Length: 197
Image (tube, rainbow, N blue to C red; front, side):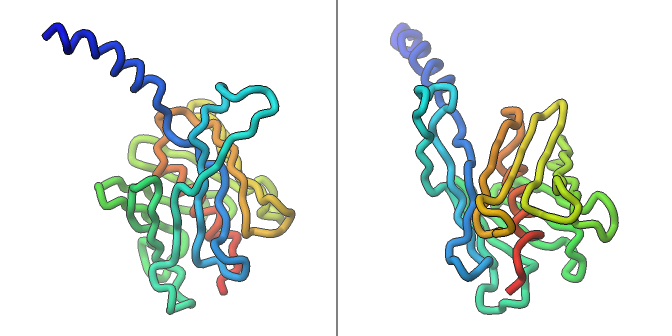
């Protein structure tokens, strides 16, 4: 019993220092196609970096069309994010205004337009928390944001103006916002800004 108490402070310190990766960018796998995406994250805590030191990114996940050989069907996607796998699909085959993200472990996140026929603003919910993500501008879709007084900010912007192949992510969300919720928001942005070819 005494041995357990000796290791308990060490285990607690280790678990407190462990931090979830910070998703930093998402990019198309190929320069001429929008059907496969790579998701990058930093394992560094930004508060621990020295002045002038940059975060190191590494491949953290992927998102791709389920039916890669059927180029006209953009309604089903597969993902792997940090080892968590699942699908994103339209709730109804003929309605691109409602989507569901489902992990193979049972997590469900729903996505729907805030207003019928308006793809510039979406509601994303895991049944406990609902966030709104919207395009910053009405006529240009290079910047999307969540600004919530209770849960923080989430900001996506293209690395090059009007080029939807590479997105930077500024994640200042509360710790209780799941990676699945963040992936749902990332998916909505890249889906709604990608040429469907």
